[in-house]
Every structure is written in C-alpha cells, then in structure tokens.
Image 1: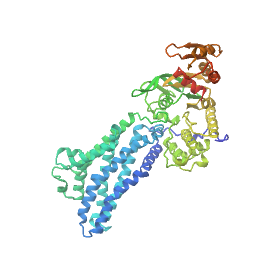
Image 2: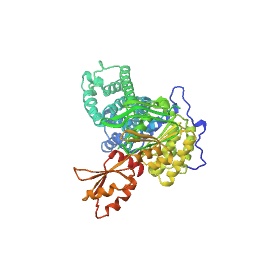
Image 3: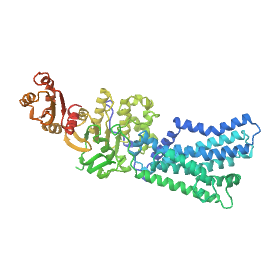
Image 4: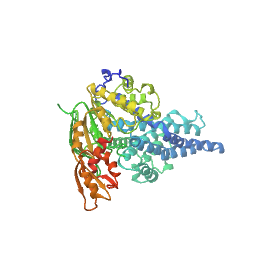
Length: 282
Length: 308
C-alpha cells in the first residue's frame, strides 16, 4: 500500500457491458472454478478409489482365477456395479456439493457479487459437475473394460465404437442424476441420506420390477439403451424388449427429464436466498 | 443530490429473529462508516445493499436500482465480505484474477487488473503464495483487492480492518482514504469507533437491527454525552453513599430504590464517573459492593462509542 500507487485504474479494466448481459469470460471462469473445485481434495481421492474398485476386483479375480469368463465379469462390473452403484453415487456426492460446498465454505458470496444472473451460476455449475462426473466415471469404466479384456485391443469387446457407446450411455445417466440430485439439494436437507435412500429404493428395487413405475427410473433407460445398442441380454434385467421404448424414446425421455430438473433447480437457485454465515451472525 | 444507497422502511427477518428492523436511511456519496456492536445488523444491511438478501419488507435501492438479485448492479459495486473465506488452494494472484474474470474481464485484462489491485494493497510480494498460508492481515488485504479489481463505483468493506496489525491497519485506512478521494463511495463497517473515526466523520449507527443514529460522528458523540447514563450502585451504607454522590457535579440524579436498597445514579459523564468510583469505594463510610448499568441499550452504545 505504497502512496505512489494510484487508485485510478486504466479504462481497459472496466468490464464492458456484454451484448447479452453476461460476459462469456465470466461463464468460462465460473466453469473452470467449479471444475477445479471437484478435481481436488479428499472427495476426489475417495471417489477415485471407489471408482477403481471394480478394476481392482477384476485384477484380484484374474490373479486367482485365470480362466474366468470375461463376458460375465464385464456384465457384473461394467453393467451392474458401475451404473447401479458407482455412477449414481459419484453424481450424488458431486451434485449435492455443487452449491452446498460453496455455502459451507462461505465462498458463494464471491459468485453472488458478480454480474452473472443466479440461474446462470447454477447452470454453469451444473454443467461443470455433469462434465467432470461423466469424464471421471467414463475413464474408470473404460479402464475397467481394458483390464477385464486384458488390454487386448483386437477383442470385439474393446472396439472403439462400443467403448464410446458405453461411455455415452453412462454420461447420459450421469447428467440425469446430476439434475435430480442438484435439485434435491436445493429443496431438502440431508440430501446425501435422502439420495442414498432414493438410489437403493427407487433405482435399486423399482427399476428391477416389471412395473410401469420403473419407467420413472434412470436405470431403466440406461439398461434399455445398453440392451439395444450393445447387444446385451434383456433377460438379465427382466426387460421385455418388445414393450420397451426405442433408443430415441429413451434419449428423449432422459434428455427431457434432465433439462426439466436442471431448469427447475436453476429457477429455485435464482430466487432463493442463501444466507452466508458471517462471524458476526455465527 | 440523489443518495447512492437508500433503505425505505427496510426490514429483514430470519425466521423469528430480526436482522434489520424498519430502517429508513439515505447514504450520500463519499466515505461512510457503519458502526455497531456485533449482532447490530451491519452485515445484514450490507448483504441487503449488495443484493445477496431480499428485504422481508420495504425497499433497498443502490445507485438508483433495486439491489436484490440484480446482477447488472454488481458491475458498479464491490464487496469485501466479513467472512474469512477463500478458495484456499489458489494463490492470492489467481484468486483476484478469478474475481476479475468473473466480473467479465478477458484473461489478459484480468491479469493486469489483478496486478494493479494487488499493488494497491501491497500484496504483490506475496501474490504467488497459496492463500492458505496467508496471515489474517494478508487475507484481509487480498479480500480488499478482489473487491477493487473491477474498479467499482461503490465499495462495501465489511470489517476490513479485523485482524490486521497496526501498520497494515494504518495502510489500509490510507487506501480507503485514497479510494474516497478518487471520487468513489465507500461504506466501511466496524464495531470499533476509532477505526471508523480514522476513516470518516460520517457514520451510521446500528444496534439490534435498528438505526439509532446517523450523521457526523461529533454530533453523535455529543448526543451520547447529553443523554444521562443510569448506573446502579449497591452498598451496605446506601444513604451515606447517596448523600455523597448527590454533591457531585457530574451526577444529575440520585434515586434510592426502596425494593432492593440500591442507588440509581444518572450521570452525563459516565467516563469521569466510572473513573472516580474506585476512590469513593475505598472510603470506609461509603463502600460499594456492586456496580452495573441500568440501561442495556444505551450502555452497549456507550460501550462501543467510548470504550472501543
């Protein structure tokens, strides 16, 4: 704070009023901030270890049972453990922390005092959460696939188009879960507990029953798309293919649900007050 | 001249708790101090003025616009929040750059603006260290830098001097003066009178969510001093003590309470009265067992005004 430093700043430091009211620089900065928050800390380490679990399990199986059935292992680890447990759990942890972490760490103020509409703050954070969660789960899932098939790139199971389809379907599920849990975190307390109850009760049990309610689960559409696009056996999940929706219907239903839930959450975020605790208030 | 900040019968409730109670207030351009004890409602007032909170009742107008949820207004205002919160993994430079980018600057401009803002608060030598390793004073200065980085017209500084050492405090006060001299408006909140006095003569005083005074700090001091303070004394010889007190020039009233035998003293010079009390108490004829203020509200105001 030397006397010679001038308070007056060059006019180039005055952010211009952008044509659309929001500067793309601000949105990019917010995306980077949201993404970098996710890519550090204990949360990342814990989730990475969790996502590595199927790969580790397969390495153990390979060590003790070299003659194992790769297709069966793939079905269990990649098409059961990943979509039913690890993907929704990762989405739950990240999506519920998307606003709550900023609130707990009292940094939300730094976002609210910027010229960015609140609904866009939420939307960009959602985008970052969905993107990072998708990339993370896809990387670990593909690693698991490579380990299961012993890095045999000539194997039909490891065809690039097949791997890309697996990652794409999984990412669609991630987006839907992020929308759902993001909204949940804005309207209820103890979102982690409630999210777990939802995952076990709804996505875990109801998705397995041949009943109309299963069409309200993300898991159902994930499985139908996996069956149709990856030639999996529909009997594994008790899904009669004749009455199941087409791939485009699955995409449409999941996409609409994802957008509606994200828009609803952004609307709530834009209107709700977030009282950041101050030392005085505490 | 239109005010830069206007509260029109504004109230803010947190459930059953009143944060701000029916405040009507106009703040003109320049540097204004917001004074009040902890829990007075200073932060609530600033959060309302910066559009973070919606008034439960009334209106809050800043720079001619409604403050609540008005992102366009954030181009013109800067806030140094009270909470000691940062993205701890970042360096001070990266944090201030990020804030500049969030304000809409391109990365290149944000770098230059961050450099300038950090130089204003003398943080350039430590700008590349992680925030988590900063001292309290350095953190305060970094927070001020982020509030200045987009060159706002109106700056809100919530307890900016908290935790700073005397040298840094002096320097920060100097920065605030220069910001004010450059034509910008600054609202500085504090619970310490001499801090506010060092920054400006114009103050707004809050207590328990209410606006209790506004204007020149000297007038407020006079107001406090002309208002009699009620002090209760308990003694084993109340009549002798009362007789002695009534002869004092700084005492304007003495009442012997029948219910508990305590003496209620009214004085216009509480400082002087408290100063000579020990002398009276040492006298064998007029022992004093207990002393306390009978006017909590005024006492708290008094305490923060006179005993910062």
